[in-house]
Image (cartoon, rainbow, N blue to C red; front, top):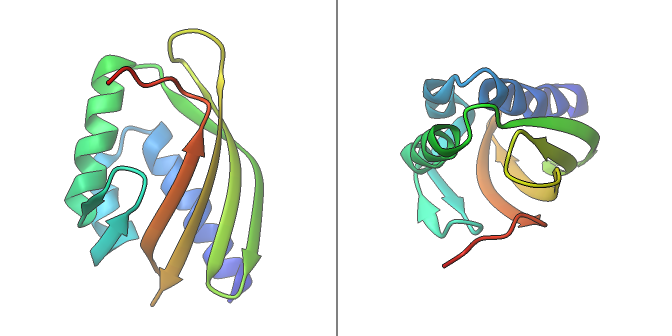
Length: 113
């Protein structure tokens, strides 16, 4: 099971890097919830990825580490192709039935609100 969950993590980041936003519909559960953006459903990820790629067409992540414990994943990432220095990201997510059901994230990206 660990290998399948690790492959799911890499599939998500590959989809992001390939601008394959529609893949989120299969990667995330229908009742997915992102604590990072406080939105539900896989369409929220499609919208977030689309918006980020519209603002930064060269945005991509490099997976530095992936740790799997049961159905929980922790990933350390570096985001490139954005304004300024590359950003460090830490994501944790819960997997259910082979799809991502819940996500938490921390990032060094500055967000002006």
